[in-house]
Image (spheres, one colour):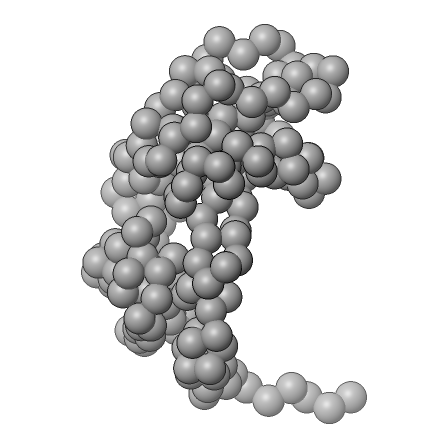
Length: 191
C-alpha cells in the first residue's frame, strides 16, 4: 500500500465506484477498494457490516497488493435519509481501533510520536446516545489521557450520522457547540 494519502478526487472515485454495493448492503457497510497501477477502481466481492473484519480483510488484501496498487476501506452510514461515505486506510484503522495506539501513546505520524497528554487546549466532546460506530463511552474515554483542564461534553439523542446532519443536531447541538467555542475564543482584531 502506498504511504501517500489519497487525493480528494481519488476519494470521490472510490465512493462513486462503491456506492451501489454499500447502499444495497445496509447500514453500516464497508467495502474494500483497490486502486490499480492503471488508476482503475476494483471492489472486493465482499461487503462487511462490521469495521473489525473489514479492516482485517483490508490489511490482508493490502499485504498481497501489486506494486503501485493502493488499498482502502470505503464505509457508508446513514441517518435521517442522508448517507455519509468515508474512505479509510485499513492499516490506520487497525492502529486506532483495534490496537488503541493513540490512547496507549504508541501512534506515530512519520517519526513523530503522538502524545494525547500534550493536548492542553479546551476540548469539546460531541457524542450521540445511539451511535453504533463510536459509543459515547469511547469518546468520553479520552478525558484521563489529555492534559486539558477544560473538557466538556455535549450529547444528543441521535445516531452516528445524526450527530452531524440531523435537524435535531442543527437545532440544539450545533448552537450549543458554537456558544462553547465562542466563550473560549478571543475577538478578532480589526485591521
